[in-house]
Length: 101
Length: 494
Image (cartoon, rainbow over all chains, first blue to last red; front, side):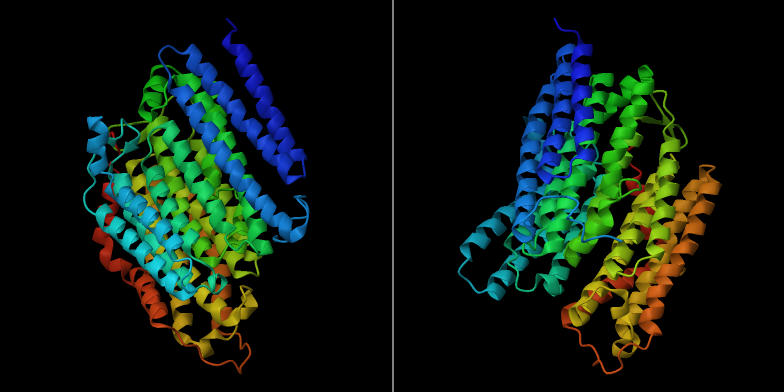
């Protein structure tokens, strides 16, 4: 069986890629994809822990719920990006900077 | 099964809100052909009925014990916050009738979202399970993202909404990663199970990582520095009733989650009403740092603002910092002080936003210079704003003074006297920008030719309902004590 550490390393790597992407990407859709990476890194953790802890199925249920919520969040986020695109004709975050101060 | 059925009976306020939600959605579809004003009146009436019923159902002594197999705690904290959320939603709904930004907008989705968020806030305040905390927090967040972007043809509303969802999704994602690690450390999703596991065995440095990640998620909800960047932009871009709602409801729920997570999950109650951290990480320092940084940065940034909504955004950040002092006290008294503060904050902050809405109605601007000369146009409105601002400042005899008093007293009791001193100094800084607003309203001449203001009956009633608690708060010291006492009865302390 693959030891727990391997799962944790993969999830930590995924999390780091997600955070790096969020900090460097300027395209709103790219940032949303990086946010999905963070959610999925947490899902890997939850399922892996659930597999390795005796009698703890809660983690797998949690992961399923996270997938549903992440889908809802992505749907709303894309709707907002579309709506902004309709007005400004671009999805660059640096350009969405009318509010400041 | 019997547990779920028994729980339903004590879940009445949330069920009423869900029922009202179903009715409102159907009513919105059924009245598509009606004139705007007519369908609007019907929808607002139905929503008001639902919120009012939920408010009444949520009053009274909390049941104690937990609901739905230890998912939600039906304890004193939830008992106090449920009516607070319902009341905030009622005020928000009435504000939205008077907000110029929402004139001519269809209200169907707005009232449906408002009902959803209100119910989700109640779940959030009661959740004692990591899954429940995450789900309720996300429900509140996703619905608020849509509320902020409600005016979909407005550039600023969209931009605010995009910023909100990006910040929100990142911070809840980060928090989720922290929760998954906590699950790995303790092997359970139940907060009290987490505490038992941490008390049995120290978790070491991994717990520090978990706390920092989770603090990101909670800090986002309560708009604590350094997770506050969304706050001024979102407050400016959203329509003012939504801003008012966000500044009170989700903030209060965020503090409830903070109390649940830190006091029930990673701390153990002692004999004399104090709490001690478990798991080998002393997290009190984390909260103290958050409190000091949030207060100071919020107040200093507010000094520089020229837009009323941005000013109130930074003011709400500063208030979050002050409330965090209560959380740093690590005592039951601190919990009571936090909840009392939140109750009083509802009246003073919603009051200030109501004045902003009414001023925007006649001047069409949120800039501070638009407030010049209001003393001549409407002494009544100026005096009301004065009361709200003095209350926010924390000047006796207004209610805000007692809010601050309880929080500082809890800090002094916990031998954090210096933190209370920092809080008082910050209140002095805050006085500058609150008085600046008042000076502009009362002293600046403005354009002398503007006509006197007329208010509708609804405006008068709302102003009266919000001014009264701020002025006569002093008479209800006993009621405040009682709220504080009930709120301290957490699930395991009842």
